[in-house]
Amino acid sequence: MPMLNFARKLENLGYDALHAEAVDTLQVNLGWRCNQSCKHCHFQAGPDRTEEMDRDTVEAVIAAVQRSRIGTVDLTGGAPEFNPHFPHLVESLAGLGLRLIDRCNLTILLEPGLEGLPQFLARHRVELVCSLPYFQEDLVDRLRGPGVFQKSLEALRRLNEAGYGREGSELILNLMVNPAGAYFPGPQEELEPRFRQELERRHGIRFHRLLTLINMPIGRFRDFLVRSGNYQRYLDRLAGSFNPATVPGLMCRHLLSVAWDGRLFDCDFNQALDLPLLPGLPQTIREFDLEALSRRPIHLGDHCYGCTAGCGSSCGGSLAEG
Amino acid sequence: MSSYYDDQDLDRFGEMGAHRPELFELFMKYYQQTMAAGVLTVREKALIALAVAHALQCPYCIDAYTRVLLEAGSNMEEMTEAIHVAAAIRGGAALIHGLQARNTAARLSI
Image (cartoon, rainbow over all chains, first blue to last red):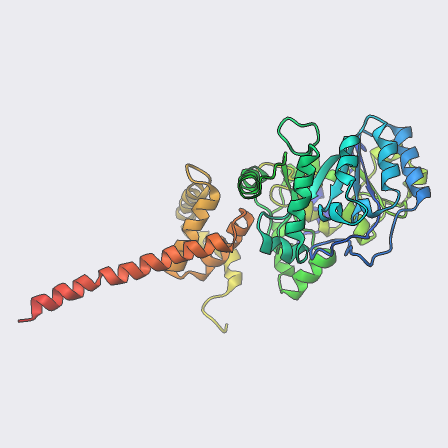
């Protein structure tokens, strides 16, 4: 069965064009350098990447947030903490009374010179979304690299010691789970108790919520799909699992993504694919205009099926009940 | 076709509703309710399904439930145990039938 173009699919549902509803969240990609080289990474991030947000662009981000009073800033990468301006950005934003999120790969907390990060993040009340695809070593190491599981556990222990993830604690520690292969994540509400039980029982580790993310068929994950002969079936399954209940909550309708070089995108995935905002809209953080961007039409592609399949998928987890 | 089994056929299961659709609909309704979470979780039911699939040696069900189990947060440790359960019951079932042979032999022998 040939896949129906995503925009046409939405048209059939009565959306002439998909528009944003607001910019509640500014997602800031601080660069593609990372201490890990995960096999699913849509940016193909790794230790050798040189793309990194410079100080001027960081200042432009801070100015845009101050001007617009956006409620949530979401820091991502690569490993955002690798950027030398990360502490300055966090300190500047933390004083603005907004929700500040750091997407942390966990092992970065063990890098030389960064060992004080848990306390720094706790002091500034930064909410953490930490990547941990599973609660067993072989699968995590296969996806994220040798030794990553044990290092991730050590990082989680340090975060728990710093006050993160404890019941009733305001220091939020959520886990982000993505599948280690050509399949979708199960329902969040079913995976969460299982992860909680296994991590607590085996390792004494605590966290608040578990969020699931579908792997996008782009970047290194696309390479894997092609290499393993799974590409077409994965695309067909994404399209075949289209769930209209996910459309109202799609993250592009509430979020704007800033690339390391200051360019603006509808989401992190469009950034990876170099699909800029549609013509006529502000294109860089220096031109940031909340009003113009809040109701913008979204630049769609067939990869968008990755956010609408099954329970749906976003940086905030699934979008519909399983 | 080079083989009796084609993994693409799994996606064509719905074609079995082309004739006597009411029977297929009844089956699917029963199937879906059976496999949904109840007293047992979806993962536990899928482990049973995987074991049965191995006992019946149905390649479609093995494909389908391996994926269901990965998505449900299961792993090869659990799946392998479930497959051993199928193997053990199949093996035990063969062995217990040995008593039929023993009984028959006793009946026929002087």
